[in-house]
Image (cartoon, rainbow, N blue to C red; front, side):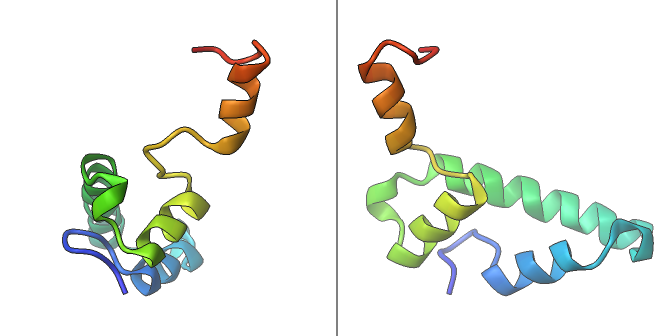
Length: 82
């Protein structure tokens, strides 16, 4: 299940599993557009408005908009870059 404006997890997986060498130019362009739109929606949607599954998917894919626990710990001990 995906939130409004987001790519479904099955679509993401299907796109990732097929090598670019086996995709047509149209498929590659579609993947790029869908990925860019999904990334923008991930960034623009506050975590409070995301479903639990979408939050988990963003965390796994690295699309989270909040600082990770590891980053928070690094900043707490003065090792962070922010």
